[in-house]
Image 1 (cartoon, rainbow, N blue to C red):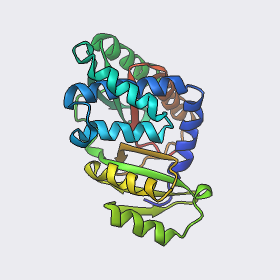
Image 2: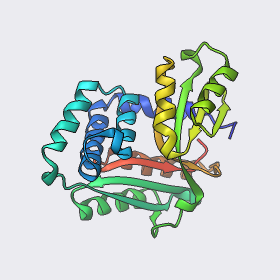
Image 3: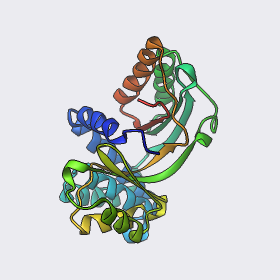
Image 4: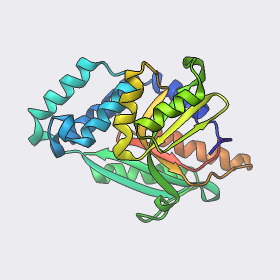
Amino acid sequence: MSGHSKFANIKHKKEKNDAAKGKIFTIIGRELAVAVKEGGPDPANNSKLAQVIAKAKANNMPNDTIDRGIKKAAGDVGNVNYKYITYEGYGPNGIAIIVDALTDNQNRTAANVRNAFTKGNGNVGTPGCVSFMFDRKGQIIIDKEEYEGDADELMMQALDAGAEDFSEEEDSYEILTQPDDFEQVLQALQEAKISTASAEVTMIPQNYVELTDEAAVKNLNKILDLLDEEDDVQAVYHNWDE
């Protein structure tokens, strides 16, 4: 896995996200509502809710905001009409793209996602057309500038907590877990006062693809930017080696 600076990508995303922090909190608020509707308000008995809470904390959402969101969702279960939909498709030069959306209007979202692909010279495919190229994993990124301890010690802490893989990049450490183990590994790191640059259950490409054609890079960025602007889109995964 080494050789790909995941943290550089995450910092780039974070800079964009910081400018739209309200959108991030709105996205997580929707996820909290759906998780509560599907499994109840207690994260101890609702693993999906526990994962969303972990994501919220990793994005610096205040605890009282999280608690208010859960309580509001618990008292408003009948009015939560959002539904998860995943779109899969191809960008320029066959770059694989997965789009997770949470919407109350499937027709609107499908049209907007399709429009983003079309404008970037890509196309939406059938379900399953690219997801086999990814693995669903818990991913925790730690900035080396924020961690002064020993790398081997960090690796042992992560593995002892249940992580399945640890790798060192130029500017960061990456910890991978099975989705069900993500929360306990993150909690162990938080209890050890280890700060994280990013922590979420995500889709990790099995292989990365380089783009050398400037037109292809421009078109792919157009797709990704349009999807980023779409309110219903929760997350976008791709196998482009940026």
